[in-house]
Length: 232
Image (cartoon, rainbow, N blue to C red; front, side, top):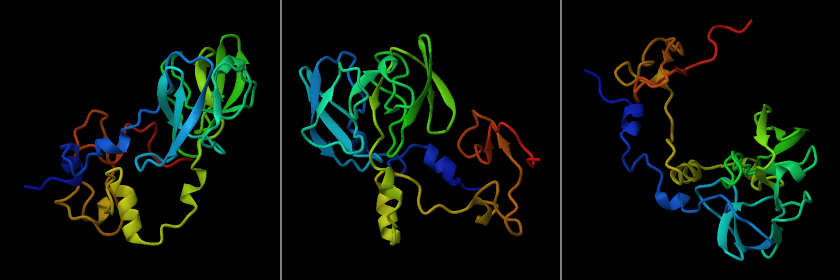
């Protein structure tokens, strides 16, 4: 009888593989009602996020969003202006084509759901009536309601991958902050008892298509692939 493989161990949900709640104590979204202007009170370094976080104070309280490039403490953020100024939170129907935006709302008023990772941004591609078509970081076009709001600009933190890690210990602490599995052992290098792809001579992973609702341990290999086989 085989022992638990790493996917099963992680799927159990113990503290070893859970992200600390403290790492994600900032809720990155703007309020439903925004009027006038706010001010960037502080730029926060959060180990749980890939970009610095902007703490913004407005007349009804405080909220947090990913900081955009060149944002600074004391900067005024306008919520009513219909200009594509970096940092402003604007309804997309007022923005011209080719404007870079991030933290886009999925539905009007939900506070921003799409594009929050460091260095990312989307671009408004075309406007057709009440629909806004945006090119996402994946290069695919997505349709949004014209009433959806977004933050103008590009998220800061684009250069974070350019600095070499150099030491294994530094990599350990980067992964530890988000409870990521590291170092990661290749499945085909394991023994047969430890993984479905284990054993065999050389890297010859067994062809395996896992079901979408498979439990941890069976969900290995290709997860509901769009296609299989060699591309011609």
